[in-house]
Image (cartoon, rainbow, N blue to C red; front, side, top):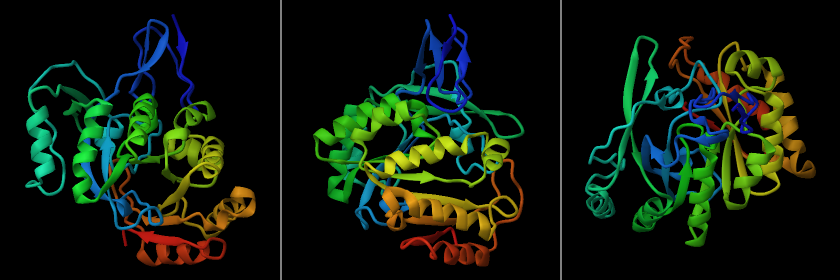
Length: 324
């Protein structure tokens, strides 16, 4: 029986057993389910500024987790290995993805020892432009992540960030995990491309404390033709999120694609109009592009990033530059 997915603008109509464009949601007996629930490709303890969040508990650390799959197809994707990955034939092993950072951490050793005999590993596949490759995912329950986050408090951890791939293609895991973290007075952060329906946003919004949302361009053509998305859906996502939690916005500057002063002025004027005209206090991160994945254009000149940041400051109070 066919079923429609309601997560993003693609509205994939899937036959029984078929997986959607995100490669992480599948029709199982007429119900759309995420196939990446609890399956992590990345696990790290990061500075909060790396999300990037500059005005949410600055100086703190946050447990950062990623899975696989994405609702966009950005040709310049920085994490394409996991964003474009999809399910492969499952297998079970007794190894564990390592926690990035200080390998001598007592918390890491304690957690690894406790879980090394029970964590299941499942491979996913992606194409690097030349051939298909495989990487493993480790299965974690929300409770296991919460236990790890609590152990990492001694290293400055304040909670969890869902990041690296697009977390909302597996929104059920985000909701369940964030709800549990709140019960333990831990903070929750979502790093997202914002291409999700209002229905899905309402499912997770009560349990999210802060978001960094990519606003990749400000024309419908950029979203439709270049990254395979929907600008209006992203704007609606940002507008709603801005009313309920701390948000910061990132714009990656790509030469000859979204680097005009006109584009920046229109975008920042719109941001400033949010929250009933009080949006000028929403932080914006203007970030430098580097060649990656399928897009080989030269890196954005540093002076372009700085120049566009100055343009953004005409409308916004907090503008930061990144990758410079």
